[in-house]
Image (cartoon, rainbow over all chains, first blue to last red; front, side, top):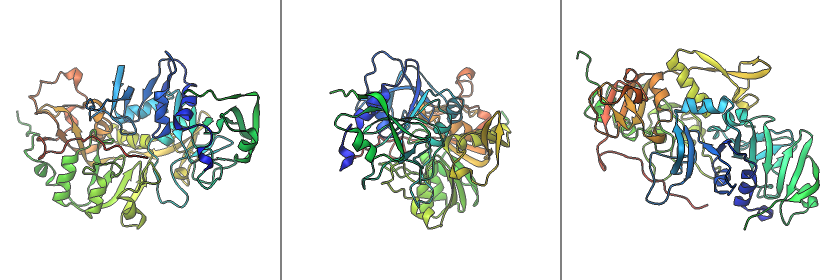
Length: 224
Length: 246
């Protein structure tokens, strides 16, 4: 499977987490994005916001020490950091729509070169799962997407135009895949960093639309 | 004290008068704040053709607790308004999904922040509002938008409800509520949007005045019926989620 090439799930999350700057308020989506909170980014102080109104949650609670009335957006029993606060759902989405989220990290099925992305509905599906994704996508200052570069049948998830129903248009600022770190540029994807073990030609062959390459392309630093 | 007591001795009594065709909002986000005991009582009560509002229809997590999906399976539901008609993981199937796909039950899929704000608006006397959420998506097709200060917004309408079922940690006899941690979620806005709010309460209900007014999360003016949740197994309490292997 080509999906196993390059970075693993935690390494993709690590690369995105290293973009977070001191003092940022960050919302992490379910799945791989949650793993961004495991990354060691030194003494940078990040406040994690969850859709249910928990502002300032910390690590997953240790076995036997869970508060069953304290969960993050993924339903995991988490802990609170000193300085945490809880607000109700309408206020929590006021945080989002009001532009107070510095970065949101989400999974997706597809990202297009103009920064559209799709993550709530599969082709031919009736209904779907939106959750807070459309609010976050439309209103966070930065939208970071983490996804496997190709599908199980080998087609690219980085596409010229999304053929799945989009979550928001023109909002994606950064894409981390197992192959590399990319920015949608409207006319293509700009490869900022490449994953260890991958070549530019392999990435070009597996990417929809135009691929441009950073001068002096760097390899993604991988821990452990 | 001339006001009728808000205390109810059982969940069955608290939901007994709910008529067919009612619109009911359920608090809760994952386990916290979900009124498991009131949902169970409503299944036994049997009201039909209900319109139910909640974040999700339930059933994606184990152990499964009373949820909107169970009322659907019980044949009591005409329509659901929620932020998920399908699970977040495409490989998961919600119990609700087959009823929706077969057309037995209708659904209106609403972004989560829009759902919360529609409820808040209903409780705050705002008939409609513009939001940037869902602009440019399938949800906005054929609907009213407006450009304000150069940005496009979608018109969304307030969502008033007949009943809100919520769960809180502490209540006094005046109906003032405090929530513990993530229990709060949709509960306060649903209480304001409802004609009648029924709250199930974790702790023994205290005398009016026992909660400092500065510490009240939801004013008792929004809360009409209170039932204390008994200990397990008679009462239902949030359970630890069973983690799944990928």
